[in-house]
Length: 334
Image 1: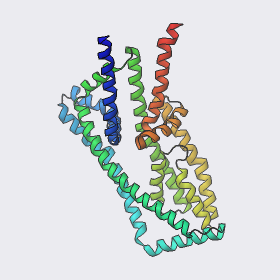
Image 2: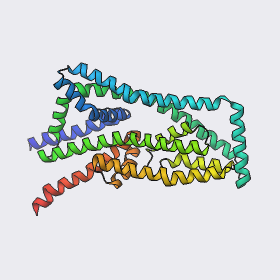
Image 3: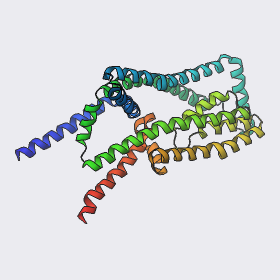
Image 4: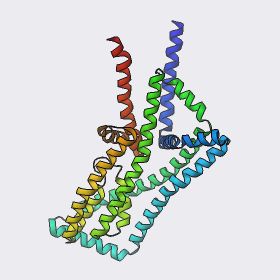
């Protein structure tokens, strides 16, 4: 009885303190997930530098962090800077912007009879604009904090990788075969999403930019970059950008360009999205398409941006654990 009391009391304390720690540090979870993702991608490089080239852990970790800055963080910040710069360029000519908005409002009223400038709509738009500005400021601040936490955690993961991996491996409640299966599934899913999602975004953004340029959309490169970013949104995806552009072209009377862009996006862009997304997932991790789609929806609701990687991982791990339970306990019992 005393042994059971100690055991269950220890379990209760672990659960309670774990909940306190997770609840208190949840705002840094994106940095942790980002560090883990990068660790999976650069782990082999760290092993090669330390075991083949006999580098010290600290020097090898610093070299890999410099690689992460050059290949991952610098391009992301450059794209954000480019996007902000293009938006600023668009807003420099206030007269042109006001004229564009006025013409757009007049077109809507002529085509639909709806008064956009009524008091209720202005109040609603003001509220949404305020929330949007606050959201953008919060996202920029969060991006900086996430980057600092991610680099900090990744450094310590790299220099203590063997002890960390052995400790986590020893805690897994499985036999050796199932431990290898779980670790392999985590590695494959993280690697496939970390490589496949940016690659898909680049491909779709490039294809969309060509369509926008041919259709005569203003600032096609800017909207192409935005299209690349919204590819992570499940189900809607690129439609969040190209559909409003089609509506805009139709409202300004350019029906040929509107119809052409709509056909181009529906036939080519959307199908490229479906084909490449599922081919990459199948090629890199042999993942069922439904796990990818619903995993992304689940992950974004829980983790935000990093949910596009770890949502499908959670779904895949759930089915893997069910399979392990069935094989170890139900099938053996029969």
